[in-house]
Image 1 (tube, chains in turn blue, cyan):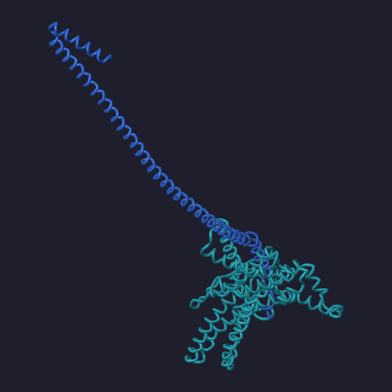
Image 2: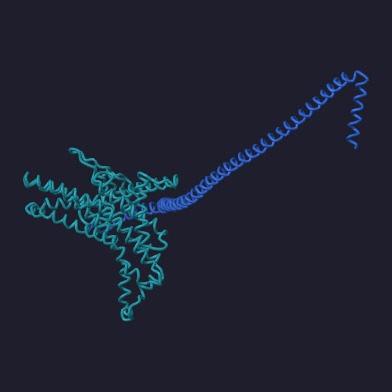
Length: 166
Length: 366
């Protein structure tokens, strides 16, 4: 069977061409492709791992952020409450102070009014006294125009003094 | 193991299908009994197509043959080197003392007459049809794989689409599912060679299925091609053989009476050679059979012309149906044979690199 006998020419060319093919592909072809595919695989695996870690970190950060926002909100409420309380207190205090001040002012005013009233009464009394002395003087002067009358007066007065002395 | 079953199934299929095809062919010789010359014609026709040739016959338009003449390169013991186009044999049967033998041992080959007048073969490294197809497929392979490799160099981290993606699928499938498990540790050293073998066999198988130029040559169905592949695998297997591998061949762990008259060592030693021999014959026979079946089915159309229009029409329908079917089967076989050649080479390398601690583990797997 001629089919079962290898031809020397074909053997020769097969050795050469297959040798060249193996040399080129085994040196520059397949190792590069396999290396690149495998490096891509590791890159993808690493990326997935990193993504997972990042996702987990994100969740932690998100939780932290939420906690911070929560705290802030609580703080805000607290501060608002404090402020409201303080305001109320301030208003209360101010009201109290104002009340006291007003009472004090009214008191002062009353005192002043009283003292001024006393002064005025005293003034009036003095003027009344002066006026009555003046009138009395005028009356007396009018009555004591005559010497007899003056003497009678003196006598009477002396009597009165004596009576009161005895 | 599941995968091995699948592979076994496909191997059986690829073996059975030629048998089915042969049965389908059987009516032809029966009807042809009265016309013996016709039957001979079919055999000649098939043999001519599956064997090598100095011209590449493309087609025939009317009476005009269209064929591509290929260069003839010869070294004669007496007259030295010769190089000429094979078209010279078109004009005259003899050129510079060389003729193409019509009959005898060197039928279809270029021969010269020696001093005694007997036909002798010069050293013939002509670019024949098979050589041309071989060079073409080698170039195609280099271009394809280097294109993919370059696209990886350019954009290492980008996922590939199109042709590079397709090749990546093939390459990584063979690398991860065949070479890695079959060889085991240290497979990286052998992966480039085995991948080259896979793509070499696969490319040539597929090109062989294309019925027109530059396909259709019976490259992997030629024993010289499969022989070289098998010899290279044989060398790699035995060069990478570990101490344990050689110990298992010459001094296996069996009772003394089995190895003192060296019965088992002889069997093992023969086994070293039968493994690559099986590789060679398996690929050669499968592809040759595939080509023969397709050609035989095509011949059915022309052979039955003499049997009347009714028979011819029905046989043509049968021929086309089976041709299509066999075409699909051959496509499968093209891949499976490349796969099996690679896988068995990898398995043999893996067996040769056996570790001393578990000497029987791999044997069991086999």
